[in-house]
Each structure stands twice: as C-alpha cells, then as structure tokens.
Length: 492
Image (cartoon, rainbow, N blue to C red; front, side):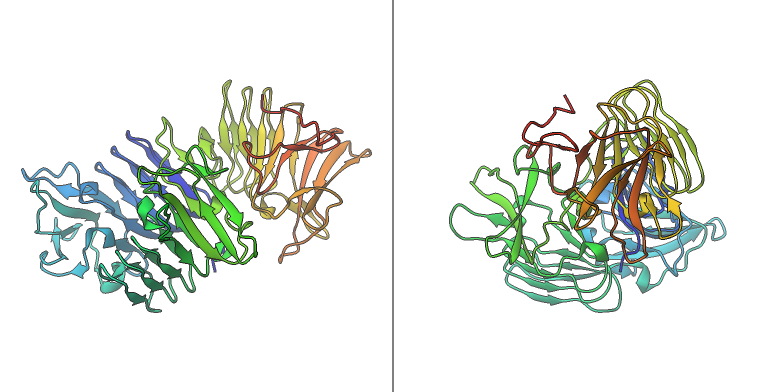
C-alpha cells in the first residue's frame, strides 16, 4: 500500500533544474531541453526526462521511463549531444522502463535488446541499441560509474495482439501489460504495474500495488455515437493504494464539468459504477469515457490523475496545480514571496512562509507551519490531514497569521464536505476568545489518531471554503455565516 502521495512535476520546453524535497513519491516530466532532475531521496520515484540531453539522478528508488527514441539517442553522424546521463543508478533497487520502445532487456543490441559496454576503466557504463530508426538514430544511455545490470532492472512487457486477449501479469514485480486492439482483459496481480488497454472496450484489473491505468488516445475508451460502446472498465481502482489514471498523452487539463478540456466524474443511477467522461466529441462524434466499479466519486479527485505537462513558462507541480515560484526542503525553512502572484510550497518541516503581496497560493505541507499570506487574495491549500492536525494531547496545527477578506481555503482530498459541527465529514469554525484565535476543526480522527485543525489569528466567521467535489465552474463556494443562496463572488 502506498504510504506517500504521488507528486507530479512538469518542466518547460527549455532547460530546467528540478530538485525535489517533497517527502512524497515524485513523478517528474522534464519536457524538452537540457534538464537536471533529482527526485526526493526517500521516494519511490519515476523520472521521464523527455527530449534533450538530460542529467538524471537516481534518488530513493527510481524508475527511468523512456517514451520515445528521441528522448536519448546517438545521431546518425555520431553526435552524443542528445544522450542522457544517469548518476547514482543502483542495480539492487532502480530500473528502466523501456517498454514503450519495445526493448526487452540485455543482449547484443539487436532484436529488441540492449548491449552493455564500459569506458574509462569502468567509470562509465553504456546501454546501446544497434538498430537505427529511419533517421539513422540509435537509442543510447550513459551511466556514471559501473553498473552491473540484471533482468530486474528492466520493466517487463507482456503484450497482446490485435484481437481479444486475456493478459495475465505475475507477482514477480512491476510489469507493463499492453492489450493493443480488441476487447482485452488485463490483470496485473501484484507489483506496481502499468496497464495499457489500447483500442477496444477492455477490462482492467490492477491487483495489488500502485498501478497506472494508461490512456494514450481518445479512442482507447469511448462512448460512441454509433451505439457500439468501447468503454474500458477498471474493476479495482484504489487511490489509497497509489493507483493513478495516466492521461499524460491526452490534452485534458483537469476535473470539472466535462467541457473546455475537463473531465466529469459522476455516479450511475444504480450507484454501482462511477463514470469519468468528457462531454465534448471528436470529429467522429465519440466522447472519451471510462467506467469504474463501485462508487469512487470521492477517490477520483485531482490527486488520482496524471494530466501531463501543461506547457507553461515555469516548472509546475501537482501540489499547487499552478505555477511554482518558491519551494522549501525537508527541513525547517523560511520562505519569502515577492510582489506578484506567488505559488509557495513548504514541504516538510516547521516552516515560516511569508507570501508577500499578490494573489498567492500557499501549501504549507507537513509540519507545524506559520503562514502569512500578505496583501492580496490568497489561497491556503490543504491536501492531507497530516499537513495540519492535533492529537488527543498535542497540537501540530498551522497558524495563519493574517487571514483577511478575499482570502480562501481549499481543503481537498481529506474527506471534508462542508461546514458544520465537526462530525460526519464537516468542518467546525469556532473562536477562542482567550487565545484570540479562530480554529477550523474536525473532531473525527484518522487511523493515527490525528484530527484536522488549522488556527487563524483573530476572530473570523465569514471564511470562504472549497471542499472536495466542488469546482468553480459548477457550484458556488460556500461561505460560513453567509446565506448560501446569495454566494459571494470571492474570486472576482
């Protein structure tokens, strides 16, 4: 079972430096350009360097995934300017996912294998294919230091055919199951598997482990106007186990009402299946749509998806869902924003965050943080009970020092649905006159005995909240102490 959240990072089309201290399991897309990528040292990480000569570091347990030969290659003229460098690779824990390229493991560099060679007295190890593409380019990776590769360092590919297949994984470790065309049945069993159904209405079962359900084309799972439905069914999606819906190859931007590039989550009338769907059709009149067994309306939140690179001017990650300006480390940090709209993430530690002026997005992360939003309309964002909580005898609550009109709280993926008495998924707002603090409290404990709580300096009753399942284009933000029939336009 996954004990840490997955955090997605997306680089730009230029040269990036992405070094994470997230305390989670990082999935990092470098994008184009010459990138330096170092994931969290304690995570189970995935690094996709993308095009360009990238300098990649194996921290924690790292999977290096390659989706195109252009991600790392020796040119037809012998230039190595597009060959990735990987340092710190440990053959006892790290691996390469080359299944999208069709490579199966070690060999003589032909017939889908890679040949190992060394240079500079074993200071550099190379993996090479001797089979060129149409442009004469060949896949090559360079590793600093000697690496004693074994079969476990290569993610296994179990593929089907262009007809209906029953594809069964193993319990030996992480595998990629590809169904291709046809109505396939894919069963991953144990391990952190990737299930790629392909075209046709497939039935996908991940089994134990943190599994990725991958959709690389709209036609992989569609609601067809012809009446012939080719929707995939995912039988056992489990967000708590670390499962992810991988839509990085598509152009969806997030969850919403199903329009303008968003996907809608809804429950069928019988309450037996959850539907993830777009309300927009392609040129053939087909809509992307996936079915899930059971009521997963709470599980299918933004943390359950990889929507891919939003292609912006700055590195972004999935904690803020926005441009990332200032990040902390695993220690106790003092972070200062600027005069514009900053996005700030403290990560672990007891941090002091001063956002400054501007409309800022602030994620304190784990630890007992002291946060000042400063001038402007600020958003204080919480994804996890452990971001700010109390126990029966101690407080680890964040303190918001200067909450003011125009500021708002996003409290997502914690299981809270509205304001109330602090029970049954509600959040209570109460003022302590002696301390001159307002508390946002749940009285329901998680398995560790922790109860979500945030403290605000001063007396505040009209607090804007965005809870799970609400989207700005679908429902008004509920204001505590204000008639919900007359919602305030808190975001202009």
